[in-house]
Image (cartoon, rainbow, N blue to C red; front, side):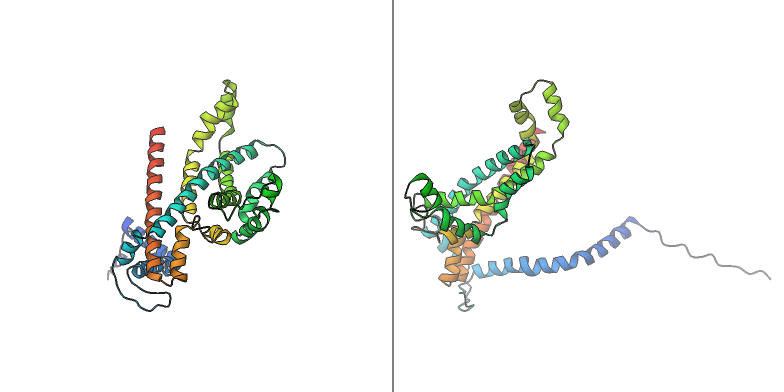
Length: 306
């Protein structure tokens, strides 16, 4: 009697689609906790703020009536909003240029120094680690006071740095530069250390001077780092609030009042949360436009140079 043994069923072939589906399913399990936090603390507040900007809700959550773009129309016709926005733009221009240039200069100095580099790094980067409240109180109580402040005492002057409309904004900019230049300095220093040394050696053999090596090797290779620093600095300056609020509270005569402080005052002092949300979204759109323009410009420059 002959028995027939059934051949084992052939395993289903593993296709690329199945592998990709498996990776996607497992990947979603790993990403799910972050997505939940991201949605709860970023996406949902953004959507809620947009809804509030279209209503007349106050800080207590009452009087929540849909008014469409009424808050935006009022904001665009409010001279105080435009004045605060202009102050923000002025602060951004005055602070971004020295923060980028000084960050580069300090990084070049430290990179070329061959002794106690840790001390120089700590000196330039140390202030960036201080909280904004500490920095503001330090400059408010020790640097800027008329009569006995460090600046007036050294120069023999009696200038009211923070209470004069002609000097208040410059004073806040100076404090901000001293406080935050260390971050740009650190980014530039890391980029300088990544440049291959043999490029400088080859240029020196060819007779290139130090200035020619800086202009033809260092600065071009720092282009991407500079683009990153400029974008980050513009975003940080457009969102300025802490030091201005702590040092001048927007004064004197609203000469240093930023757009975020204006939104804060409207929301928490004027109790108009819906209107404050609309002002915040106007700033949000401005930041998005500035970021896209900057990225577009740097991308075109990179394509031309390549």
